[in-house]
Length: 493
Image 1: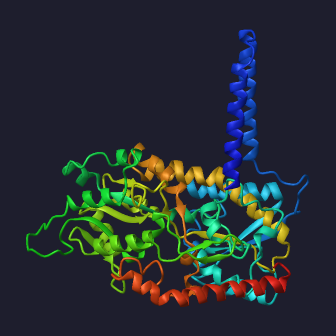
Image 2: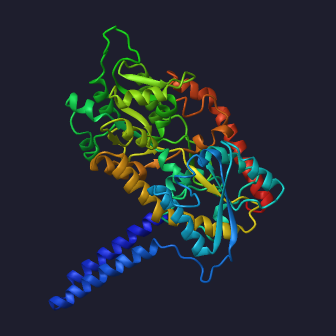
Image 3: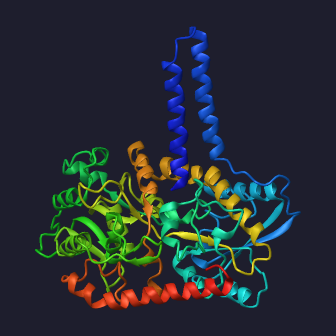
């Protein structure tokens, strides 16, 4: 968060300069105007400088080939957030193409993207094990890459001179949860734009909101009254047994639709994390506190409500496709899903709204939105790790300059969201994109059900948590030990 503090310091300094200019001995009118304008211009220049990518003088990699490995889930977004060879007239695609071209020019490199099958990192692993130097960067959904850290397949980004993760083109809420034992072996920034498409939000039917005279939902957000109690009361108001058979089925109208893979993960939206850093910077278990128990009770009771439709029950059938169709037919007031669904909803319904995930209660300060982040790393066998780090930094910087505006301001705000108010909600949603260490590392922590998926499906959560607490602590300690052993072998500890 240092870059945010730096920006605030710049703005505060500018304000102090302006105040001093106004409160000093009164000069002639023209001179006062000059002082004020100079102070403002200086502040603007300092702010712009703080946001500018600065590369070493004369940096030139003489046309070197830079190979970026894309795990299969990302290759699905190849023509959206990454880059084809040519522009095709699609705004985000073309911005990504321009991004790659600019980075190639500023570093004098030739970038090649190499795609794989879904959840297939074998080519990366084989290259590192044989020290072949096949790839200079590797990008993946974070869950598929974390298992490559302890074996030593990835480089600690903190040790690379070309990367400054405190700059504004990185995502600190996510990277703070990726850090482990003082190292950062993968990071999420604006090059990893798929992170935003997989960030959660609340979609709502404007038709149902109007039909039931439910008021202005956006005013709830602006008035800091958008919390779970508010959402549940509104959801209960529209529940209807449409076919009159006395049974709640797919044919009826519901106030809220979600599923275990979405709702139970929304514990993150409450600000709770299953682990935390202690005073020595070591990751420890947070414990079962009042907030976790309260959130579990809230979700467990929600699953029993007649106005709630569970489109993906735990260990049940995934009915998301059917649920999406029902939402576009205005059969659900609220639908909890990823931002990526804006494309389908815009194509299939006349109007809809979008809101951030509600706050847990009135005491919560910020809005948070669960995200399944994409990340980028430097393979340990990269032929020139310093070059890789400058490429990684430049890709993130240029993505913020080009791809983010295309996706955010044009594709989402103008094309896929239907009102200016809805577009403004994206500011809140993206600013609150967050993740939890325990979710990223669930394959290593080996708790069943997954710590996040357990929330809301177990009534006596305190007893369940107590039953897994020993294994949770043990598995976390074992993970940290493996990371330490790898760091010691490398001389990083």
